[in-house]
Image (cartoon, rainbow, N blue to C red):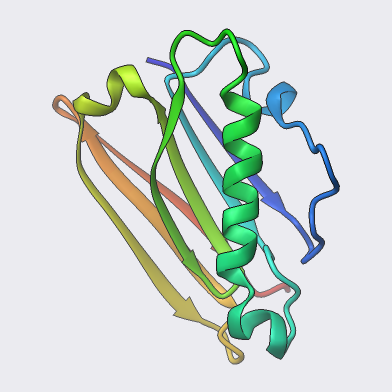
Length: 142
């Protein structure tokens, strides 16, 4: 079982056209599970925090799946869960061939900070007798 975990502070900037993440996500082989945590998926302004997450989450989901699911890949990736909160998002993806082995999926979030833009999102699951928990957080500086 191979798992790739990545974290990226996007700085509230939209991705450019034809962004390719394959070199980052599959740098050694084709992982079974991919967990990605992004911070500042939208600008940390009142308008960005008020409603831009869903649009950017969809945009990044499409980029991730396009980067992982290239023509000729025998085992395609599937988005299993997304947890998001105020500019934070965590994605859990897995090869379709192992999705039936992934059990007890759960997501959660914790809102912190004065303006609500700090905190964490997480995803947890089990494979067999092994539990996994991945946390993406955006903490206050200093």
